[in-house]
Length: 293
Image (cartoon, rainbow, N blue to C red; front, side, top):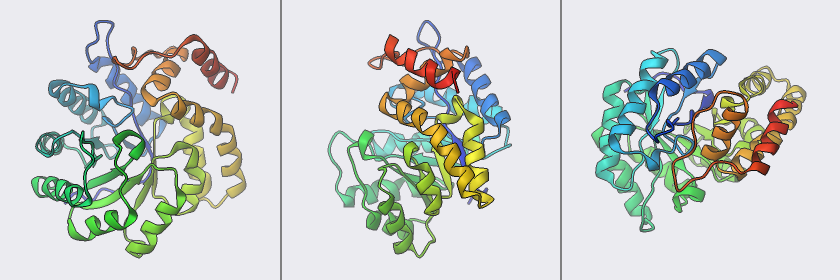
């Protein structure tokens, strides 16, 4: 099984679209290259930020191929492979594995609310179908399914390639409970942007975030300060970043990050309907956050 270390600032690129609404692989390549050049410790396309739920399978595959080709093994790539059905999640995960992904991230999305038995079987079947690690993604705000720490640790115990958890509830006690139940063996990655400082202080191994698209250096500086044990510097960086983190989460990551890239002169198109671009007041707020910092 792939053993490349996944840690630090894990950057989520948006999926750019052309004026005609097609995936713009050339622009995606530029965005991913910039994230790597800026110093991200890993790249995670096709999550919520990457609008994976709104892509066709051919578009999904194109994003996988473009991202892995550009990264060229310089940092780990974790592909978001979630889908409504177990079968198509496996298809996406296998495609990512063949393309050279280091791991896949899977959110249990479903029209019907899944029982814990169904969730566990979903991940077990995916795990049996691939040979690379799975990051279990818990984000009830988008999936409508909340996985208890007990279930997450049980799947870590029972399924060989369930090796890490992205916890996005914003509840620090969840992460602490996972650590207690697993004896510190199950790595957690923070997916709640406003909680990043507390999460790292609680032992999170990485921060899964779209913020490096807009302000990469403070994200990296925050992680470096914490690794160096400089808590006061980390706190100052966090307080500077916090308004932006809260804004992009509240406004929806594809919408706000694409709006921010446009403000910075690095446009990546607009979100795919039914998502809409930022309104004028939102753009004004982003300008204030990005151009006066």
